[in-house]
Image (cartoon, rainbow, N blue to C red; front, side):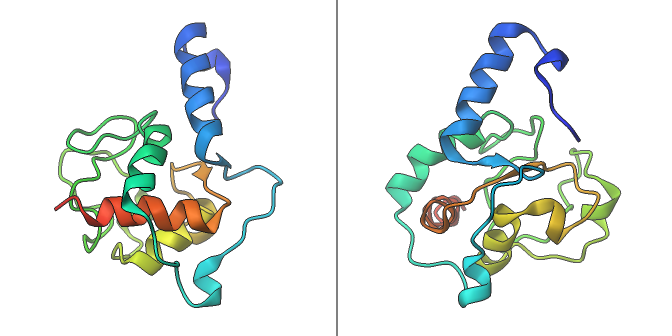
Length: 141
């Protein structure tokens, strides 16, 4: 999915783009991603900082409700593509993934490289930011 400002109203688009800029870049961006999963998995995260960073994720996701992306409560340990009231991409539905901390780190590094054909287009280049967000998500049972 390619996102452009033309897909939504000007004020909504400005808020969305500002929130996304706070935590990462579109997965199709040329910026290099540092894959901490390749270096042994995500580092120790700070859940409080992750909660603050999650505000950028909230442009598409919610903790308890499906939005542009699926809800995140209970995501750590959950199989990918199984929430019944969310329209996942066929690629993610058939991926066979379970959202372990290592898989979440790989996913946030570059989702479209991990699961070609996914609707997720956003990535987080900074390994510590990914670890912090994952630590926050781990607290949401």
